Length: 134
Length: 353
Image 1 (tube, chains in turn cyan, blue):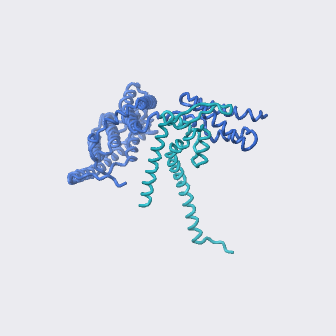
Image 2: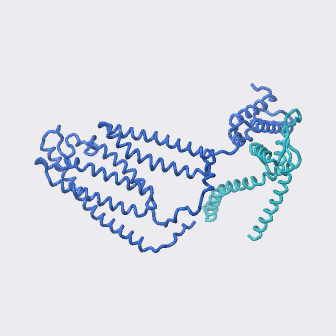
Image 3: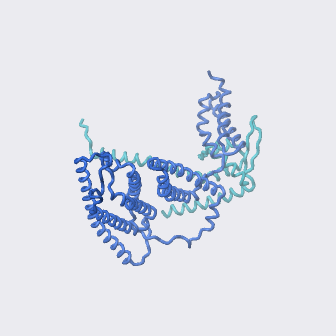
């Protein structure tokens, strides 16, 4: 069988090389944009999960199971900030011979969550309109 | 060998938490305690899945997934900038102005010449000392400016500046005209500095201009008369390049200053050529003369005459070339002036993005 370079092979090689070079760069940008999008949703997700009392690890696990993974270094400072803002209340308790800090929504937190969910709905509606127009 | 795996996880986690505590910006005991609890819960969950205690490698993998202690600790405290995004552009501008446009010219044109004058003949050492002091001065100035801006950032002084901002005080629109090439100007400045240093060193190291002939030749009478004007021309050139670099929006400056420089050089050259025709003490040695220590040999006299004649011819050629250049530069400047006068007042358009 003759092995020769056809036009198709050349074009395909150039296309694949170009896509690989530019595709990798685009994938990195996409990942960063996805991260920014998730970051915006994190507070609502955390407040929503804390409608039931949880401690740090179980909260993280619940969020990860629902598709919103968050690392320890991000979650705990966020919980501290929300508590400082009066949206959460926490309590150290001993469970299974270990001290754990349990969090739940404060009354102000419940109100804020309701308002944030309303805002979330409004954003979704606006986005749907924009996407329909596009 | 291996200690029991039930002891290792706790010790490794404790060591990890110790490192995080070390790097944390301020005491964050409760956060670190929660982090520790989270890590231990992860280990427990994994051990429950595997049905056995974790080994050191597996615990290490969990800690690695958590992140480097320094990085984790940095997230525990509030975000802090030494110089934040609001002040950073001003900081960069002040740093550039002070280091490039104040410190360097002061050292080159004031401190340097002062060191040279006080050096009692050892110019080379004076030049080296000047550059050494300049280097130290640059670092000290950069440090002080950084400290001042760090204090401003810490005291949130920029917030007060932002409140006082008024759109009416914005500078007027600048017309988009072709600006001089930055690389060309920087190169001119750089070579100008080296040229000036060379000129300053030549009287004490004639070998820099005469080469091996310095052993039997010395500078003629004309150089002593015209040394200072030539030096001043060099300084003028440096100032010109510096001003063009500092003010690129002054589009009239390169043309006009080039014309002025050509005119001044022509004046100096004219006087030099005129002075050449006046022999002193019966010998014609305007540019180079035989050194006192050289033998009065016919060969050396011949060499000196050839060098003098060559320099005179070069000066005459330069004078002619500068005359032509002067005419061209005058025409360019007149064209620039006519263009500025004829362009009607119009709103400058923003460059297309």
